[in-house]
Image 1 (cartoon, rainbow, N blue to C red):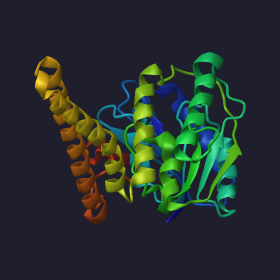
Image 2: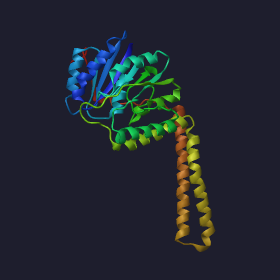
Image 3: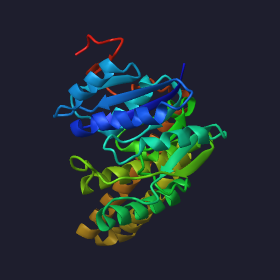
Length: 318
């Protein structure tokens, strides 16, 4: 088994690929460890894959996985994590904003007994209004909601023990919430300061359109981390207000029977609607309880059939 795997999702980063791998190689060369690098091309529309493929054919430490279309950063990261053979897995961005020279610091921190080490971009080289301030607000909210106070959830430069990260389900924009998701298993989490550089090539893939996905994922994580062991109780709690509203409106409509009109009929209809919603929530809770106690996770975390791997010992895949 490999000591360290470095997973890097790539999307339209043809100018960054070669200097990125050179920087990674310079960082891992001094390490007395067996290291592999996995580049996951997330359906790039430029020459990213061909550049990465040529490097993989030159250096046996690099493995390249290609998606046939763009699925997003989290599925690309999940693909690399699934294929990683290292005891420790480091993830990072492919745009040269993360600095590979920080990787040995993560590996050293893991040796202190931590299960997850998170990078903190303490001197972040991004725009203040559009990136830094929203990030600080988001990190504060995430910490309050999840109970895992990480300074910089958005930093992709993180290190994980393989037996921890391979059991964390990843989808949508979940890669930024991995520490919170993994907290269910009670891992030891540490933060270290990392260097951060301004983007050299291309354009940022992040925008305001991702905000709603992040908020939905945050709600999902809160649900999973807090109520995963007792879903019926949670759904029952949700159903109580609707049940009370239903009873109140039905009683009101009965009282108003002497003056039958549109308002009493509307009240009765609303009462039945809220009663139905209350029943539906209870039914959903019971269904979730059954799944949580008897279900098994057999879902593949990313579309394997749409990915192909290229490495120096497997050069014929194209």
